[in-house]
Figure (cartoon, rainbow, N blue to C red):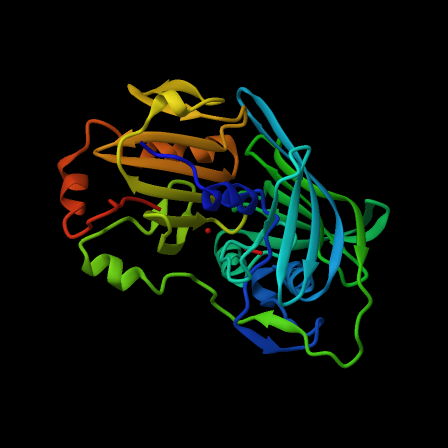
Length: 344
């Protein structure tokens, strides 16, 4: 029997894109991010990086509204957030009143402060261009568009002009439809302390330190999932989960694997769907939360990504009947099996 622990529920908040990135600090001026490569035409990348730095280093509080759309409908949440530099981001979900404080070392980053690791992946997969100025939640903002290779817009960002975090983000599918959106509806910035050092996440930030050990135990998994989702994190997570994080720089797909059988009777609020002959369980209309059993393991996926990207990632993971490949991958792993394919 598999239950969803608090760490997994926290991951859902993480994947809504609202958790600040971690430490590994260097001292830098909030406006001294490295300039973009002129030849890349990424005229907005340094603006997004500056906003990410502000999202980690500046205190603020506010209310965020997030929505994801899928084939079956939309899922929304209202979050009261409070960021305290050096201590992390406290998130209160309404109307449930549940409160979580983000681990300062969390690798995923998010809407308000994408991690340097995700920005690096973003630069590999997209062009980031400045797109003028505007307003959101009553604040002046700098606009940044993220473009695919074919020139279509994959995401839009509104960046606080007064040195605050990302104010609003929209992800779009290939047809130009908004499939995920998160925005502050109100924001209060703490005063800037003159002369204070500004903590900045060091370059890199990939959470793959445990990868050599996992591979030495015989656990193997692709470094990439469909949609150019790159592996940015791989480690064991209590109680007995293997966590794998993937991102293309905009979207995040997190996979938790645990040995055991899925107790379907306890999946209240989830509904079964048949996909290519396999049964998976989905909890939200946008399809961002799925769970299924395969080969003596339970796979749980939390995502902040377009529905078609989530479907492709889920389809790429092991399902019954388990191929011999996945059976062999389990050798040397007493608790968990492995499998497949990234800030803030």
